[in-house]
Image 1: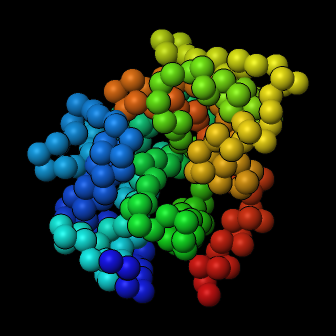
Image 2 (image 1 turned 60 degrees about the vertical axis):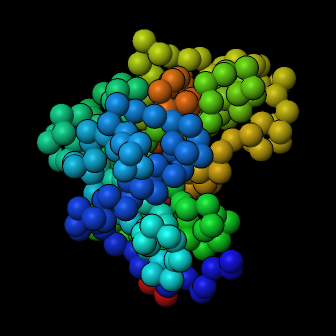
Length: 258
């Protein structure tokens, strides 16, 4: 059945029901679709969650016209964590995978991004732009200077990922002041192929859409990938310096204001 014309609303989650709906969307995407799992995933209630959820701001995109049987209207989510929230949580989520000392020592306002996903019916349309506009406004409101977070390739078999990981290493490695590094216990080299051996067009096609979107905004990657077996992903850490992306972010602000 075709979807009705969307009636989008973008806001931060305010009630426990909002977060529960966001976790149900995450379950559909990260567990049912991508095969992930975790210690606190609730398969009975179909909620993908972890210990960090109470400390994040949850940016949610809803469509009141969505005809989903479960009654949820949340069709897009983003988790956002500032430095003060990470202090209350004891760490950033990404610090289980990456050493973030260089970012912390910079003294600059930080924002961790995570768990970004859209309901399958809304991919390829304008919904992602609404989420990005909300993110741009949040960055401006809180004076954020550096955004970062892990983004994932599906699966943990490195062989088929050799070309895209190598391309990211050779062409998009973060500058030294922002170059976070994967934890030694699960560090996976990304320079698996010489740059001259890479079919760059084919390798970029193999890079997930979200990572490509961050790269287009001026993002770069940390050193090394992290193999997350429970979540069935190979993660890279994306870092974006607003000094480099301000023009593109301003374009998002302008669209958000229309």
